[in-house]
Image (cartoon, rainbow, N blue to C red; front, side, top):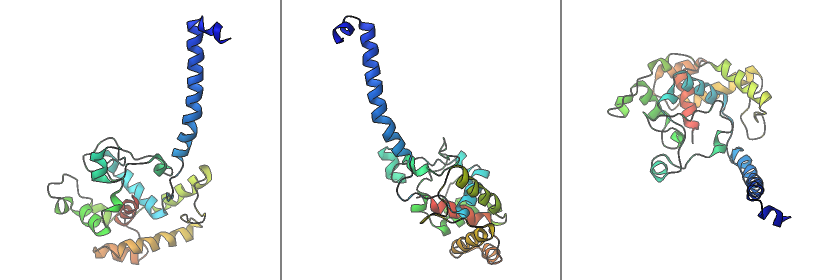
Length: 221
């Protein structure tokens, strides 16, 4: 049989291609599937973090900031460990970005604090001299859309089987329980802030956008 193929270069080439392709599929696909699963420690966003992510998208932060660290020394030296595909398992949509007018934010939660973000959002140039980033004072007065955040979490739990309410994962519960959970998380963020109006709003049961987006940025690690 093999002698027959050796006398016919075209069929021999096809046979080689089929064998190589089959071997490649057997080798690559299982590993690809494994790498696409959530990495150890990766969890869905809490409801407050999800609300902050919506603020991030609404104000097009991804137009100037990427969330994708490439495996190059120049990037890992500056931003930390390169990105793994499994870290994005619960991101819908992905916010990789394609431009870095500002720095990458994939690991920003490892080296920036709530206090830093508060000052930076109010007046970027006062924190980073020469910064061209615009100020976002409206984050301190606009209220976060927590209803949409809850609706998205319920949807992805049902449609994509996102593991909310499982052991060690963020809780959803009823809408009333979700509101209480978000407010408790917001109080922890507000406690590290200086803006009294924000503190008062949270104390009165409201969640300003600045609290939500800081919760989201703090979660990026």
